[in-house]
Amino acid sequence: MIDVARVRAETPGCRNVIHFNNAGAALQPQPVLDAVLGHLRLEAEIGGYEAADRAEAALESVYASVARLINGAPEEIALVENATRAWDMAFYSLRLGPGDRILTARAEYASNVIAFLQIAQRTGAEITVVPSDDAGELSVEALEGLIDERVKLIAVTHVPTNGGLVNPAAAIGRVARRHGIPYLLDACQSVGQMPVDVAEIQCDMLSATGRKFLRGPRGTGFLWVRRTLIGKLEPPFLDLHAATWTGSQSYAIREDARRFENWESYVAGRLGLGAAADYVGAIGLQAIWARVKTLAESLRRALGATPGITVRDLGRERCGIVTFTMEGVPAPTLCEALSAAKINTTTSSRFSTRYDMTARGLDMLLRASVHYYNTDDEIARFCEVVREQAKAR
Ligand SMILES: Cc1ncc(COP(=O)(O)O)c(C=O)c1O
Image 1 (cartoon, helix red, strand yellow):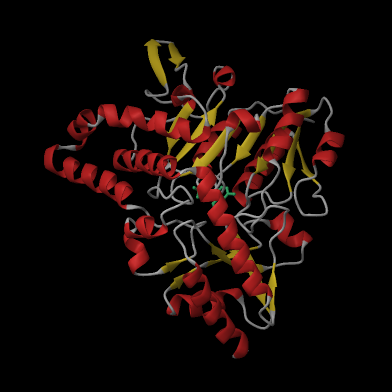
Image 2 (cartoon, rainbow, N blue to C red; image 1 turned 60 degrees about the vertical axis):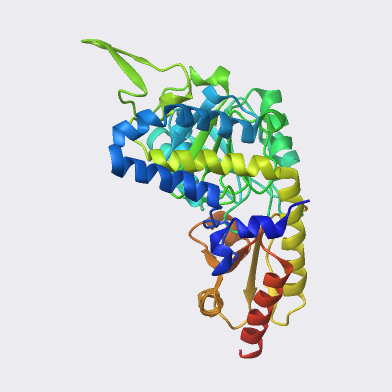
């Protein structure tokens, strides 16, 4: 059980807003804020390099904190500036050629698909979107049916940007493992709201961001790469941190996952990311996941009972992201009305998840994403504002 009063007291933003934009950037808890601000202050007081030296042990422990969160090992972690860069460093390290196939999900994120398209246009590799099942999840049966010797990558988004869907990451992992196909999981929207265990999922590479459900600072993210794969992946960019200049004509790439990093980084942010991972660990992901699901389902029930509203979330077991449309009221208008009532939400457009939105004939959704520090009272207030908008149509 989560002590909701305590986690709210430890979250300064809860005093100002009803924050249902946790899939955008969640409210940071005080320990994250303390870690970031403390280091920024130290940099100002003694100098940036000197502050990093003083924080060396704490910075090193961030790798262990992040690894613990997903059941990986510290040497398998690269700390980078966001989930996109984490994902890119893995994807662009793969060598794809003409006729090679990438299997992906219908709910794949725009940035990932744009990268697939770039590589497909450059190399002649092909992209295949695995059909979804009746519930809207990636069909594992269809995935199995698409496997042949040309498939060189399975790259799937765990939780999409545009809804409550949770793709069956572990079932996909079993298929990937059985056929020996590299499996890249975009866990940007799942890490921090549900248990994500790389050993159980059997993915080979996983990318995530700090600012969303993990409640870390903006401008932080991480990549996890399975130990046995690291040496086989040549990063698309190298610098003097990722590699050593060993002779006038030679260099040697690092052995660990830090080969996917570069030298300069947001040091205060890294410390904040470590604090966020530790904070989640102290609360417990099982408890967080249980509460997130309960709150989200209660919000969906209330919205579903409101005339003019259609809840749009797919999947069997849905997460903390709740998406819906209101007949006659564009999502941006609703988002603005909620904002005027100090309720944070956002919209999700076709440009972020074109395959999925096109298949469902959708253009724009209102996205309300809850976290464990939200409350039933906040849901009630949210629904009150939404109902007022519905009545005023
Ligand atoms: C599924 C998914 N993947 C990747 C990203 C990109 O994350 P970042 O902005 O940290 O690069 C997002 C952001 O919304 C996302 O929803």
